[in-house]
Image 1: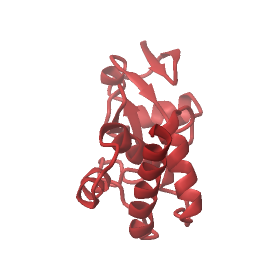
Image 2: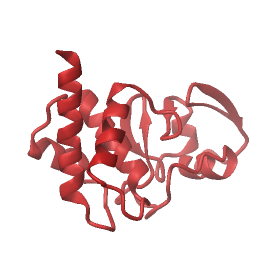
Image 3: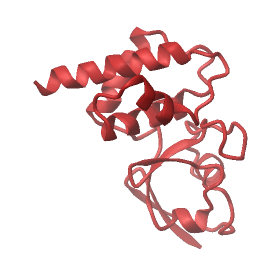
Length: 155
C-alpha cells in the first residue's frame, strides 16, 4: 500500500511499487488528462509536475512518486496556467489535442522558472514534448505570448 499526494489530495493505492504512476493516475484514480504516448519518457504526453518540476509519469514508479507532491493537468493552476491556456487558444495551438496536456505542463513549468524565455530556452524546455501535428512554431509563439501577458500583468 502506498500513500500518494495528487492534486492536493491524499490517496491510498494498493498496487505494486513498480507500477508506473501514469497507470495509477489513469486507471485507478481516473485522472485521464495525463496521456499515454510512448511508455519510455520520450514523447512528453504523460508530463505531470512532481514538486512543481515537469516529469514523465510513464516511467515514474509508484513507490518513488509516493515521496512527492504530484500535480496533474486536472488541477494545475496559477497565473502562468491561465496565460498559457489563453495563448494556446489565441494561437490555435491544439490540432488533435493528444499531446496538449503534456505541452501545457511543460510550458507552465518553464514560465515559472524563466518568466521571459528565449527561443533557445523554449526549445530546450519543450524538446521532450512531441507534437504529432507539428505545431511547434505555434507552441513557441504561444509561450512568448504567455510570457508577455505575465510580464504585462506584473508591471
